[in-house]
Each structure stands twice: as structure tokens, then as C-alpha cells.
Length: 260
Figure 1 (spheres, rainbow, N blue to C red):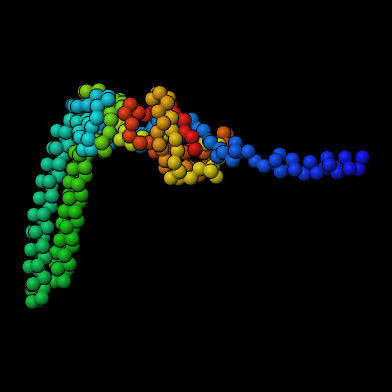
Figure 2 (figure 1 turned 120 degrees about the vertical axis):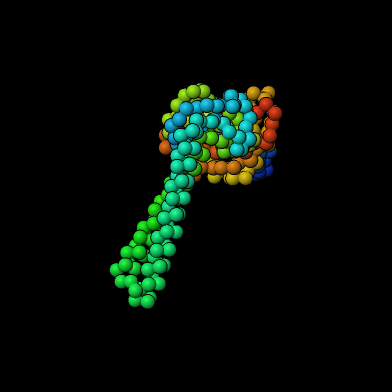
């Protein structure tokens, strides 16, 4: 009986390492899957600071534009007139400064020869300072008028695609209200959210495989470009952005999956 128990214990000692040893499947890396949507690198709504009538909108939705292209042209007759009036005011102010400076210099010379009073010199100096201040004010107005005139030409801030048009020809703009919507689609990203327990395993610069449903399962080699270090208190998830390579047929709004 004792020898049988010894033989059984000896057999168990041989079997134990075989049972405890991890399998190949246990050593395989854990893949973390997150769903998301393709977004553009940049997206803006262009607006103007002034109210005036729209006289031209050269581009429709879907059009590609270059940085500096005029997207919306407003009527500018009033702003041109204001600028010309401002330039005229600057010239008048310059003439006044020149006149008062000559008068101040003349009285200063007389004062040095005791032919003018100290009060007369003080008054001439004050008049010159006031004339110079009026010149600065007139020049500031010209700067303002030029800035307002520039607002009559709404230009593209970067190479983009027109994705939305809020106004029509002949409408009067409202300061700050959107006119057109633009997207920079030269670089696209997948925006997704990951579980808080996965955050320690995700790093900026990490390689990611992205599959886009609309591209029939084509796999894209992405890279983590941003991990927002602030989670959603309700869902306990964190936002991640993944840079995507250039790919024909890939557009913002498409659905995809990232495999970390």
C-alpha cells in the first residue's frame, strides 16, 4: 500500500510541470480593438467681422481651394471710401504737424534770444504735441479702415475642400456668423476612444493597424498622434487620434477600427 502511494506521488511530480507550463496561446500579445470615425486634420468655419452684401461666392461644396483663394467677396465701396477719407485725414494731420513744428522752432529760437516769453514757448510745444497726437489717431484710423476693407475678401486660411456653404449670393453678412465650412483633407486621422484599463498600453507614436469598412477591409498602417490625458467620467474612456496614410477613396466621416 505504501509503495503504491509512493509511485502515485512520483507520477504527479512529473505531470505538474507539464500542467503549469504556459501554452503558446498564453504568450500571444493581447490585441486591443477600438472603433472610431475618420476626421480631417483641420476643420474651420470661415466668417467675417463686418456686415455687407455678398457679391461673389466662387466656390461650391466639394471644390478644392488653395491657401489665399478668395472664397467670398463682399461689397466694398463704403470701406474704400472710408479708407480714402482716412488717408486724407492723415495728410491734413501731417501738414498740421509740420506747421506747428515750424512755429515751435521759431518761438524756441526767439526765446533763446529773450524775444519770446516762456509761456509762448510752452504753448507752441503743447500745440505741436497735440498735432502729433492727432496724426497718430488719424494713422490708427487708416490701419483700422484697411483691416475692415480686408474683411470684404474672405480667403482660404489653408489648402482645403469646401464642405459646407451657409450663405447665398446677395445676402447681407452678420459679423461672426459662418459663411463657408472648410476641411483640410490632405492628412486624415481616425478618432476613437479606448477603455481606461487600456491607457497604460497606448503611447504616442505607437504603430496601429486601422481597417476602414468602406474600403473593403483594406488595412492601413496608422500611428498614434494624440492621447488626451482626460477621460470621460461617464464612459471611463479616453480619446485617441491616429494618423492615417494617404489612401484613395478615404474621406472624413468613414467608420473604422483600430487594432493596437
